[in-house]
Image 1 (cartoon, protein in one colour):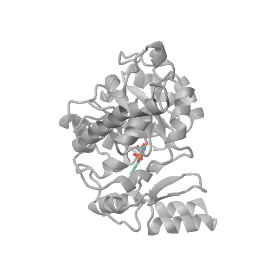
Image 2 (cartoon, protein in one colour):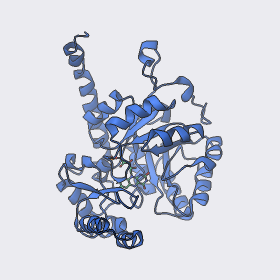
Image 3 (cartoon, helix red, strand yellow):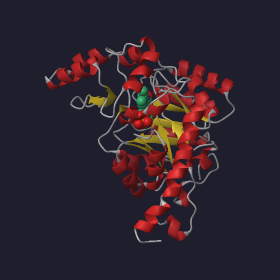
Image 4 (cartoon, protein in one colour):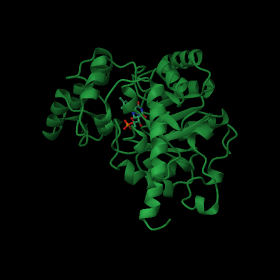
Length: 341
Ligand SMILES: Cc1cc2nc3c(=O)[nH]c(=O)nc-3n(C[C@H](O)[C@H](O)[C@H](O)COP(=O)(O)O)c2cc1C
């Protein structure tokens, strides 16, 4: 039983045999009380309290990306979000942030609904958060790490494939999600390369109870990134991203630009980590705030090639839901061609 009063793991919602046993799967929006089963990915330097509140108002779960903040700024952003929405929202903590202990404390006192975590194990904070009624949902790129985090009390797992923008693992969403569903006994949320209703329907087919999205929300009207960054996303093609830091151990998916090409060249030439770090220092901020699309790090997922226009969040969410419902309806044909109907 989650401290918020919702039993999750007991219901064994991800069991592949649930349908056969007649056990209804509980979807993410039913658990979180949102309109849609969507979580907005925490995005450092982008997902402010204002943006998270706009996402929640549009029907998904907004998440404050605290990666570039300290405890004081996080507190301000939570207060801002509360002033703008009565709907649930959450906080993303990057556990490498030097202020994490203080930020974990802010989260515990804040009354937010969800905390998502990246870059490490939130083990030492979990009990405190759960007793405050907060859902703890780590982002994982491998089943092994997820199993460990579930043992320490994680309520759900976000299985994030390498298609996604920002820091990435090796496995694809297509291969990771079903193995995660089989590997942990808590609900799984799919992330990485989900930007329309076809991909949402596919996430359900893989056994997820909902999805987390980042890239496709960068081109929402409400997203506070520089217009130059949005323009680059709209221009990007299917192969418009690359991964920097594969050799150095901090793989990050970004749009191809001068900075990315130079980084990869230096990396291949055997540059020291410190030299590479100097090169990227503050580079996401350069893209987000200054609109410097050649020297900045324009984090984006492989779904960037699907982005065609800047739209309000509520349109993005509504069209995804409508398209996914259409896809699922048409799947009836698949039953027939498989000779099972
Ligand atoms: C610009 C950008 C910044 C991101 N920053 C973070 C972050 O600070 N913390 C985190 O856990 N995930 C971060 N992510 C990953 C997202 O939360 C999300 O899991 C991912 O975007 C999903 O894949 P998609 O980009 O294909 O939608 C970031 C993604 C993007 C695109």
